[in-house]
Length: 394
Image (cartoon, rainbow, N blue to C red; front, side, top):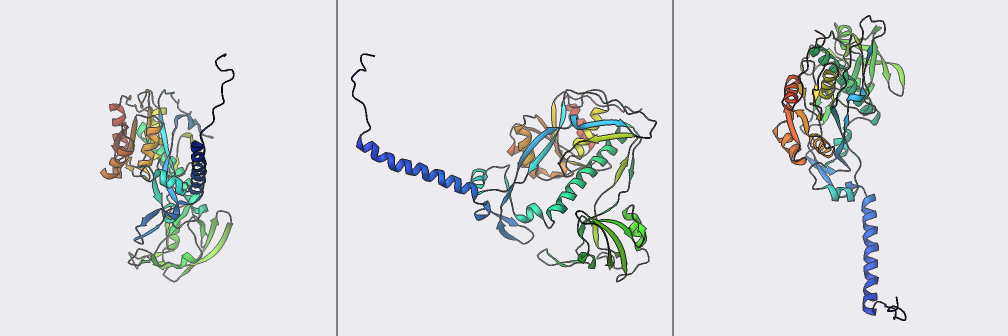
């Protein structure tokens, strides 16, 4: 203390004080630049190829990793109202199957700059993200895809386990209006007359007085009709309710003798089960969780640990015959799985070697196993240390 008493105060030299001014100004400028680039949309600098038009377009969005969420606690099995058959036991498990998601948020110049070399960041044009659908149509399709995915998964899982399950045809939902003629560039140059009154997402309830319980019912109404004939349809449109429209029929491009309305139907098949099954997916949409749902049901309704007591991420659609189909955003999903600390990721073999290799590059150290069928997925899990499930309904 005594050594400091009376000590002369120390001040920076004039030379050091002179340098402090431009350094402070440079720091302030850096903050302003960072803030500005965080607000400016990436479309000012980012470009992606539109393969349909064969031209570079602004890319204001990016497909990026989402999350890996456990499915087991979303599963509820109960007795069906009016049924005499009791609900089966749901076995608890230490491990879990993980539902993997991606997101496609808007990007700024700053986020584009930071992520431009990241394998798990894929810049997107407006068409890449939205296609030709409205936001409401995309919402309807995404949730409908998830519902159908659940229904098919329930049928496949219960059939595999030996329970009685039946697939029933669903109602008539328009997926897209069918193009009758394309230009060399791939754009549609001739639409059917139905395009003037029908939209993707419309649900057809009645055709010429006949209630439509399935696409088959509509085909029966069209029997004997000729191109140019007009039928009356009762349509349900989200946000607008029900209304009637007159639709002029046309001929199919692949068979001029076949008369059509001119749309592609959505898969709305429903499953009839001996008991109730609910998988709470919240606001998550899309069909890519089909295989994950199927494996979760098989694991929950049979003894043992199909996961081997660990967390296993799964992606891929599931078809009625148990085949596993491709999904979008595999690279981003692999990165999300890696970040969640999961060791094994089952993916569709139909993605192809190039996409699977890219996923492995984006998630080094993650064991990625490609499967083509449900049985292959179960074999892969058993090889990973899981218990092979038994047919509990036998």
